[in-house]
Image (tube, rainbow, N blue to C red):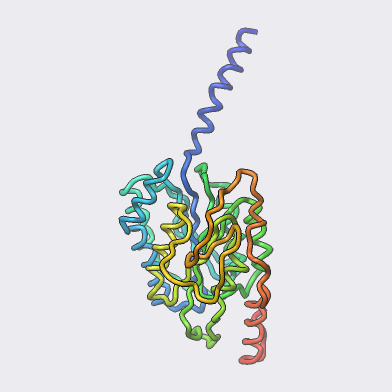
Length: 300
């Protein structure tokens, strides 16, 4: 009997140690970067350099180390077609200037590749299980998606977004609006910022930060990372024009808005914009129409 009691006591003593294996972090951040065929090698290089330099920015470094726990966890992958995702850096703990510098250098050293189609839904689907297998316990879970086009491959982006929001993953977006046709002649999408706002982003205090060109990308990603890491909400440095006023639970990085406290039992699926007037399948329809007109075939 005494031996049994002793064994039970040892089990209870072991429980806290097991829970401590998952180190607490202020943020679990997944960076998902578009490498579809609409992006040429020079643009892919500019994207990568934007992230590399952002993590070398002293302001970003200070924000990473300045949270409640003084550390965040980051993973970085690139995506294109529905089933094409390339994990460049798996979950990495950023808890010191040295760790941040090493992460930045790993990104700089990784080879750059280009694929074909644009599947934002595939990127979200790939990212969802990454959080459950993370070795860290995060106060916030954020998926950061950047790209230069709407979804044209895989499942409907709003369906997969819903799955992510059910897991309490906030999705922020960085659409790159370069105003020129892609290498295949597909026209630029002048409404990409609205598409990302209505169809891609979601969750409390989610936002869109627009890069007006690939040359503008380094500025945009530094601003976006600062908001995500420090959880400080939008930075009001320029007018959002005709995009309108942010609604409850969702904010544009270019807008004002009232900061809303996130409750432990909040249903993240409620924090989405109203349905997009052009439909969130607009990317799939545009792609089919373009390929049919130009080549007489559809990409399906």
